[in-house]
Structures are given as C-alpha cells and as structure tokens.
Amino acid sequence: MNGQSGPHAHAIYPGSFDPPTNGHLDVIERAAKVFSLVTVAVVVNPQKSNPLFTLDEREKMLRTITAAHPNVKVAHFRGLLADFVKSLDADVIVKGLRVVSDFENEMAFAHMNRSLSAVDTMFLMSDSSYSFVSSSLIKEVFLQGGDVSKYVPAAVLKVMKSKRQAQGRK
Ligand code: PNS
Image (cartoon, rainbow, N blue to C red; front, side, top):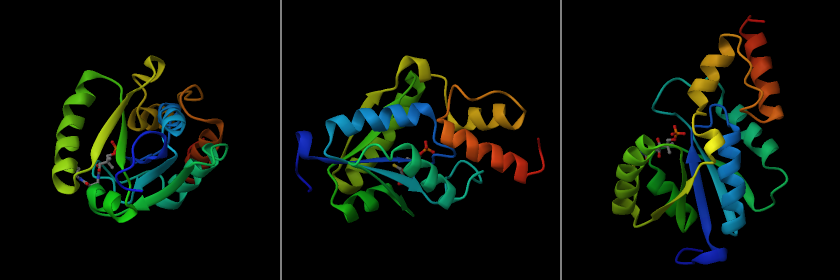
C-alpha cells in the first residue's frame, strides 16, 4: 500500500503500551477514522525499562480494547521501527502529542525515521483530558494503590489488578 495517501493509507501506531491507556485508545480511534488500516505496533523490548506486562499481555489488551474497530490490527516488532514500517509496506507512522516536550522528542524521531526509511510521521494532538496520562505514571499510581480507573479502559484495569495480585499486593 506504500505511496497511498488519504483514506486508503496504512498507518503504524508504535509504542510500548505498558499498559495501553485511554489516551492511546483515543489516538487509535481517531487514526482509524482517517486511515483505512491502523497497525498498532508493540515494541518488544521498550528502551525505557523492563516492561511490567509481557508482550503477550500488551498485545491481548490492545486487541481487546480495539475489537470494535475492524480496520485496527495489533502486531509487534523488534529492532528499528523504520525497518518494521518498510517490512509492512506501510505509508505513515502516527504518534500522539500530549505536551510540548513530547514534540521535541518526537521531532527527532520523525526526522530519523524519515531519514532511515523515507516514511513520514503524522501527529495527532492528544485530547486535552489525557495530556498528563502516561503508562509510566499510571503504573506508579496503581502500584501504590491509587485509583486509575479514569485513565485506562476497563479491560486493561482488570489485567492490571490480576498483575498486582500475582505480585502479592492487594
Ligand atoms: O510508547 P513509547 O515507549 O513512547 O514508544 C517508543 C517507540 C517504541 C515508538 C520508540 O522507542 C521506537 O520507535 N523504538 C524502536 C527502535 C527505534 O526505531 N529507535 C529509533 C527511533 S527514531
């Protein structure tokens, strides 16, 4: 599908999704209205830290919360995002921007990915109600016993609770 534009384009939405949040889901749903196919691409080994959720758990949570959208697929990748985009012959990378500091990091990523694979990155502004929602903050609040039900889909909260139980916390 490479080279397509507009409604026929295939977009890749990459991330760690450890766990997926309502902010991620909002970007996925909005991208699914613009692009004919959105592949949510879970990075196998996030650089930031050891993931709390296994790759399988992260993919399953994403499949569950995007089940209502037939043009959303979930996949995973190792190594460079640019190589993965090329391997799928996809048209564009989609990212969400919450705050200005996101833009500074994402601009460098976008330039590097375009330099590596000639693929463009398109940005959606995150809904303002999710501007402070990140997977790492959600994990920190949740693991200290805080209520994160406003920030993650119900199916994700369920998996988070099982994970906390499995770790011997209440
Ligand atoms: O949800 P995250 O952790 O912000 O997602 C970051 C991600 C996965 C999009 C980024 O780390 C990435 O693209 N990793 C793959 C390795 C790669 O291509 N690195 C160079 C980026 S220009």
